[in-house]
Image 1: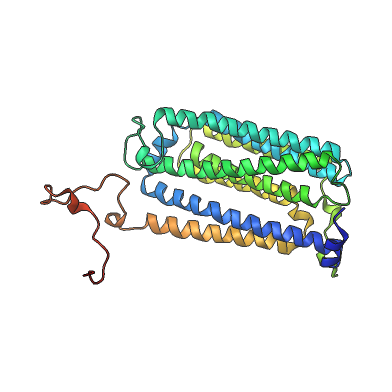
Image 2: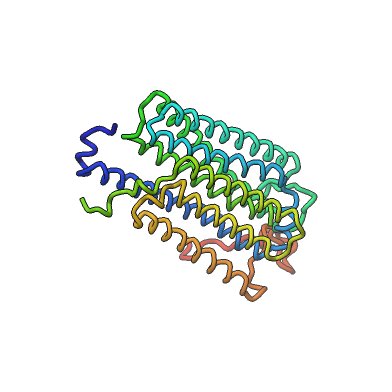
Length: 209
Length: 134
């Protein structure tokens, strides 16, 4: 249960929960705008170098990108089930589901690491470090700069999310949360879903079309 | 406390609902990949982004609990999405409708100006404006 003093501060339990949700949505809005800058840079430079971006995109490993998409969507489903379990006063099950989702996040990062290793080997690196002879034309280094910025920022968010889910999972399994106090699990879950949604947009623009 | 500050617990998804939304999300992901495997043209990116938007809407409504919360929370998200749309649309439209010579060059090395080949420093940007220091 939340400390009584916290609930008293807000006047009621409903108002405390609403304040928590609203604060999380404001945070999510700032995250959306952070990624919007990168998406806009991608849109602008893709407009300037459409053929080169297409050629660079064709060198991406679509299989690994798709695998990562399925991993994140599945982890989102597990988190949604975990929130449902904790709200239903089954924190043990909720904790196990949260830890399973965190594990999928770790697998996502491992797959991303394999991809990065391929890019480093091929020379598909950002800016001046670009040495990829397969797509030597002007503009391709910009694609890889934006690729590393978008996926790097996203991987940073996944890393934070894995930490959040792990802490929430362990605390939930220890019985800290339950039907009367599920707010931290709900907010942590919202963060993880945000990470998933950002990837859902990164996936098509970098790997598919 | 006013009534509209309360959540609507009756709108919370059951296990079957959570799984049903999950199956739709996985199916839409498979659809995105399947469409990519088919021959595709200029419409492939808008279609892929439309599917991603549908998935994002499902996640926001059901998994991020917008459906059970008061509408002002959704307004925060909607506002950020509108600003993203404005930023993206204006920037991309501006770039696509530019007079070609005004498009800045790519990130290749700056070439020396004609007639100044002997002076590689000639391609450097000018120094800061203002009075010179004594």
